[in-house]
Image (cartoon, rainbow, N blue to C red):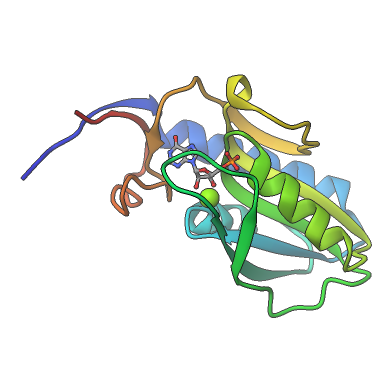
Amino acid sequence: MVQDERSVLIPSEEIQAKVREMGERITEDYKGESILLVGILRGAFVVLADIVREIDLPCEVDFMDLSSYGMGTTSSGVVRILKDLEEDITDRHTLIVEDIIDTGLTLSYLRKTLLTRKPASLEILTLLTKPSRRQVELDVKYTGFEVPDVFVVGYGIDYAGRYRNLPDICAIDSE
Ligand code: IMP
Ligand code: MG
């Protein structure tokens, strides 16, 4: 079986501490409100599961599945909604939860789309961001960690469907 070389970039304990800290900030920022967390499938399922337990507010969870048109590993900016929300976000405080932002094209498109549904507020949380790869301005309220331009896996994030179960964020070097 082929094994990809990988090295730990962010160990599990650091991720847990960061998720706890972001959960506390959210609890403070939305005090007195209820929020709807929108996890972007599939990568965000782990961070969403962890962060929701660090938020001390009335909160609901929903999911979207998006696919970027075009081929390969880079975003084209045109996004197809494979699975839409079950919930109506009109007048609701809505927080998108993403695993990693690369060019920013996917979330930039999603943000515009969701704003047409008139939420009370719409913010973005991402566990990871690759600032050097950004192609569009994107206002991200909660960012866990900045990572260099390397391919990362683990903690929900995959390479060809694998490695989502790793507790650490790892850099992968596939030959
Ligand atoms: P973008 O911000 O529109 O370029 O795309 C972000 C999406 O690309 C993420 O939600 C991931 O699905 C994928 N992605 C970007 N960088 C990585 C990586 O290093 N590992 C795994 N998936 C990645
Ligand atoms: Mg994704």
